[in-house]
Length: 353
Image (cartoon, rainbow, N blue to C red):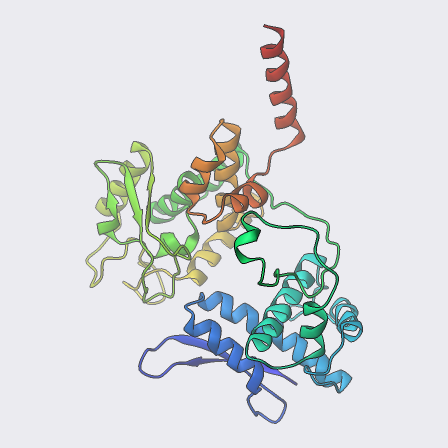
């Protein structure tokens, strides 16, 4: 059985993931690729996800007694059927979207090997396969380079994440028993920040007099990740800054660090909050309100609220810290048929003038 093992890189204390076979021997090619991603500075969460995707691929190869260098596209299609047949680690069947994510990781692994000069059936089929009629903008500048295409994809039904209504958001806020928790949920709701960005906040990042919060990518002792590569600033309301002040006065105690969100009750007292603490908080909020709630749902909710309010997608992109506007529009624009109906009614009124 192929397994994933987390290791601590000597001297740096950074986390990385490696694959071992049933005999506890490291899988050389996949581990070289994971090390490549690690040294490129990819997020530890990304490297971990790729490790688990390649674990599934390696399990398939072991069961089929095949080598990744001689695997054909036809045999790779069997991998898709295998993914649908074999349950994931949580016991649930994989969705088509998850299967496409795994296939993208496998394709990236083959592309890496191809650039190293390793000859495989998959790399040959990608290199000499049917031409893609789509040509991106400024294609003429790099037309001698092959277009990146997914090695294989399945047709997936896109299911947009659920967003909260104003009443649901207020119910989750009211369910918070502590000022710290209310501040955390309010910040997620009002700023659209990622939970890793919230957990990595320092007091020096907050300018309460201006209502501004600086989001700065940095190494955090609690493992929180900002994900964005460049720093940026989000503006928040006066009410949120007042809530921050109330938290400092009523609950914040003396600490040996500058983190805003600290564990004051249970566990390691005085330590910065971690992902697991926030997950546990949201489980309690879900139980109290009867709503399924995760921190990232507030990011989707915030982006959708801004677009409904008439914000230009370019402004929403900057506020969320996205590198590409397509990410903002395609992933975070959860406009309903009711929203489209309102926009059409507005269009009719303007046309009738």
